[in-house]
Amino acid sequence: MKINKFSLSLLFAYFLVLIMTHYPFYAICQEKVVDKSGKSPHWINSTQKDFIIESGKGSSIDEARDRAMCNVKESIVKSVAEKITSTTEDKTMQERQGNSFKVSGSYQSVIRSKTADLPFIKGISLNKVSDFYWEKLKDKKSGSLVYSYYLRYPFSDFELQSIILDYEMNQKKITEGLNDAIEGIDELSTIEQILIKIQTLRGIVPQLDESDKGIASMNIVKLESILKSISIEEVANQNGTIKYFLTYGDRHFKTFLKPKIKSNCATNFRAAQISDTLLLYYESSDCFEAVSNTISIEYLVGNYSIKNSFPLILTQDKVELVISGTIQLKSIEMDSLTIKNYQVLLPILSKFQDEVLVKNITIEFPGHALILFNGLTNVKLNKGLNEITLIGQSPLKRKSYEFSDGESILVSGSIIYIVQKTGETGIHKFFNEHISLN
Image (cartoon, rainbow, N blue to C red; front, side, top):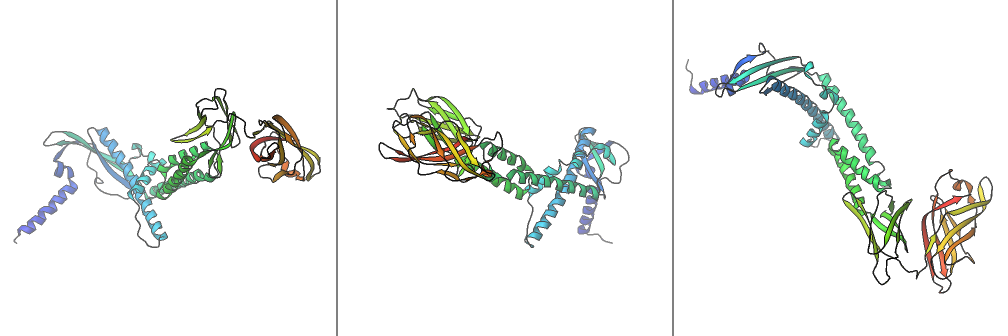
């Protein structure tokens, strides 16, 4: 029988593959076994149901064994990630009614990263190894020595499903954490709450899958946009005091941050806060009217700055009224349902030189209707402290004005006035002033 060159080539290629498959180190590296742990087991370089078979190389037995253990762990993590990815693809394709879909490599990386933290993976150890085998190899050319270490590690389909279940439960907790983190974002009322929300969302982003990561990132951008857009809005500016809000749209924010204050002449700054109204007190004895005097207020919030400047008011050429003390609401006559007769004692400090006539006053309790005092006559304010008494004009629902003992109650409102000397009319608005109920 004649054998042509083509047949000889095929035969040579067959034997080459056979040698490389069963004796890879001899065929490729020309390595010689100079020592080994025993007879070469049948499971080396094979696959077996319910087992992970991996190997590792090193300059010592310990190094080769440790690398083999790392490869066992990596192989299990990879199996879990591939299974979860496959399930995700199937589910998504069903939801998209057959449209093509491919889970990205970054998503698989996220799964593998989170899987590595599960209890089973962390529990992989040498004492659970079913069998092992090692060889000490010598390179025929260089004479260098290296160890190859083989491990046969038990890993069943049941264990695979258990890890996947652990992963899904862990993922559920992470998703719940995301939902908790984004809940109530539109109701935040302090700068500190915004910062905490941003920090929380950034902390959980690496653990999220792609869709949830998008939701978290969107809310981070939303919160950062709020911080960038918060401004300082003046409420009242009078000699020695500036009242202002930290505003974003129609929302007011509180903060425990201390403002950075600068002025060309004002001194002795003192910051305070009543509900969402912020106050800055200062002394202006070193300021001169002929100079353009200003005061700037700045809050440093992370990488953002909330800042505004205001002129200093030194003279009282306009009406300036201040609620100076606690407003008092006294019940005179009432039954189980209604406060029939009552009076309001209102302490007002006027810094204006001339007499002012008060025409209308409104007082607003949060969440309740306005208390109105309209068409007032002979209610005058002179320079200095004035305490005016207002008699209730319409009954109040008693239940709406019953508060817990020790509860701090704040009201806002307005005073409409006329300057008797000139006939000029104006309105003074007040915010978050304390009131006591008797």
